[in-house]
Picture (tube, rainbow, N blue to C red):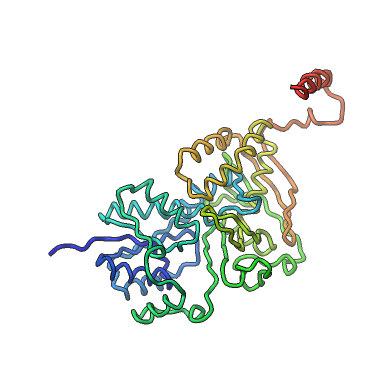
Length: 395
């Protein structure tokens, strides 16, 4: 008996990827292996197993990657202070490289000839997935349903689902739904009436943050401990990367922190609007810059700021594994071993205030900065300093 060719599909268990799964079976006469990466999104394992089995899938893989995702992807990105177009903390962008890498590894393990994803033909994710596919599996075929099939509308998808007895969620039977992506780091909401930038975002779309107006009237305090540039503890208690971010998400989210309404420039040339919620990431970004302010020298901090925009753009565009990003990461991490200590923050109705900075680092000197007279700083050198720099004005 000749065995069927195999395709590994990035599978969420929802309507779109269930339709893709069936479509792959029909059009490629292949065995589809469903792959779901648990990176902290709202995941219903029973639903995934039920829907995949109902479609005849024999190999269903659900993999917990939360700690790996935060430790090896989110934390390095935070060390680089990556922000796209001034406000976006890249929560969707940073998730795709890990999923795509594992998908290719699984394809190789089970000798699959192809991989597939459910990203639409107008979005950035198709680029991010496929650049990673090419990097790790250049000989593996990539199947992109949204760019090649004839299901051109939401109604076409619904008809196809009904024909093949694929369950249709109630909210997807009428008006096109919001497009929601989430993981442990963030939640993004797009589509529907958000596509018109004049429409305000309604409160009901927010998944993990309280509005600042409805946040508690009482101040919250939190202390983040850092070691080698990464957060390792909350209020003195050491936690795994995933549990640490989970806890910070809750504290920051209930205090109305981490909301962004952005019209961004997609890599493929389209402007799009997204509502992003990154409560824990917003808090950690503030804390990380604060701990670096007392542990790193001026030149290192300024160099990081200089490269940040390019670094963020590479991540946004799907170049996580590129030589260019890895080269910048070396600059980012050059002195991360000095970034140790703790930052105490005050949270109140969407605002973050730094209360305290503590470190054994010698980058900050109380004696040198003191207004009291001392011998640790030679003021006579200032005149020579100014003379040197005034000459540069005329070069």
